[in-house]
Image (tube, rainbow, N blue to C red):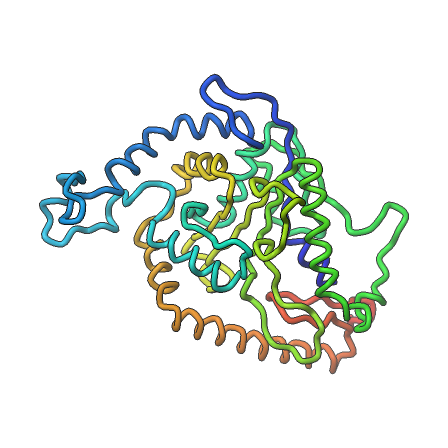
Length: 350
């Protein structure tokens, strides 16, 4: 069941590249993504040559804007900052956070990160930049009810739910609640992620892993469920092109701050990062909010204490819920993560 849960947080987005614009050609992206890169050249140049190079004693050749140069205490958070790619302070802080908590095989660099107004905006951006009209978007089911809108509204892609059972099979819920059936869950989760990566690599399909619950885990002595495993931690050499593997993360679950609307895209596909940068002009969170999160992440002791306390409280809440289920004779899947529980409804009181 844990394997199914991991799969349910994974988006696989596929496309057939149909050609390039007259301006440039990219790897694995849709033609409209190429347009996003092209039309963003002005903002990219402004960010690279002006906004990110202010004049100071260290950078005497830098350029300052009059609206901030004559202010005694420049209100940096009220300006454009360094553009729609996101606050450099937050991107650096997120990269260090990933390196500390996601166990990546290759260190994450801030240049591989885009900040947007929530993971929803980034799912929309990825769908837009990798799919053309009527191309397939594969999502394992059961799935989060927001995915159909997030993936199809603007991209006009076709949603292809992937079942966990074969056409001639039915679910065996007895196995779901059999503890012996999940003793090897860690290995099966790892194998499942590797299998997905191999399938995507073979067919040149984008592998997008939504890891928004990465640190929403808790100690449960009665469970054999594995801790979180990021695709960044897997050895995918010779399995899939790194340009096809992307990770989504955000502040809404682990930090309980969905209203701040902060999402993270990590990708080693520079073309996708640049295309997302272009589209991000329409979903650009304020620098004030971005740097609030950056300050928290940079305070590593506070971040660790916060996540540890969150895990402790989740464990207590889970114990309260499962005690009630046991008292009512309701079967449930023993787990050690996320905010949801899977229960068997056949013997639920009416």
